[in-house]
Length: 115
Image 1 (cartoon, rainbow, N blue to C red):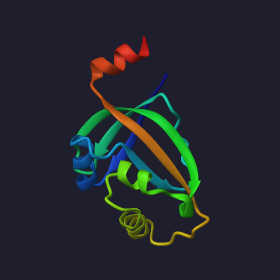
Image 2 (cartoon, rainbow, N blue to C red; image 1 turned 90 degrees about the horizontal axis):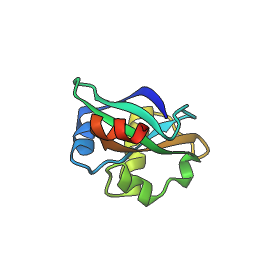
Image 3 (spheres, one colour; image 1 turned 180 degrees about the vertical axis):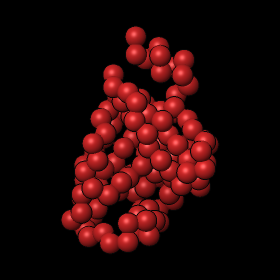
Image 4 (cartoon, rainbow, N blue to C red; image 1 turned 135 degrees about the vertical axis):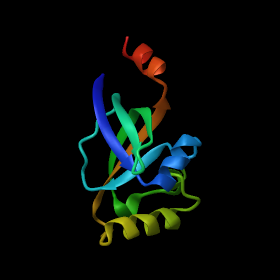
C-alpha cells in the first residue's frame, strides 16, 4: 500500500465527505493517483480526514455518468458538469478526467488495512 498523498477540497465539498455524501472526486486531466493509496482529504480551511483511494478511472468529460455525479455529491450529471466547468473554466467533451474514488478511514482502520 502506498502513502501518503493529499487531495484538497473546497470547504463545501469537504462537508459532504464528512457527512458520507461524497465518495469520489473528479479532476481535469490525467492525475497520477493509484488505488490502495492512503491520502489526506483536506479542506481549504485546514480540516483533514484520512482516506483510502479505492479506484482510479480515466474517462473523457462526455462519458461522465449520473452515478459518478451522485458519488461526487451532486444530484444530477448536469450539476456536476456545471461545477466542473466553473472550476476549470474551459472543458471540452474530449478532455480526459480523473475519477478518484475513496473511503474515509480512521487511523486505526488504515493501519489494520496495511497489515
